[in-house]
Length: 62
Image (cartoon, rainbow, N blue to C red; front, top):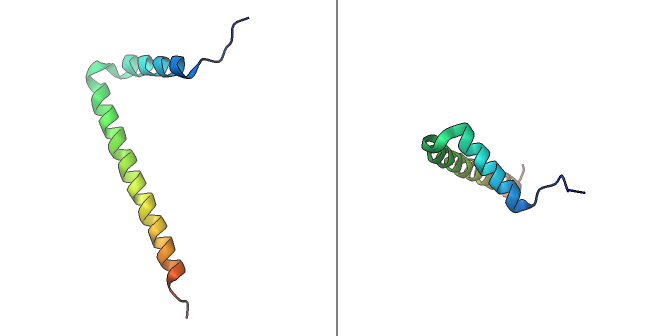
């Protein structure tokens, strides 16, 4: 009986092939670059929000 669950390496290969078919070889690097930039911006915003929360906790309330 064959397993319906793919191993992690098979899953990655299938996802990469699917992305290549959907976006094409020319647009794929640009898409990956913009995704990386978006993730960096998101992470920096999350750190800024956490920093704001810590500052509010440290300030004495009158």
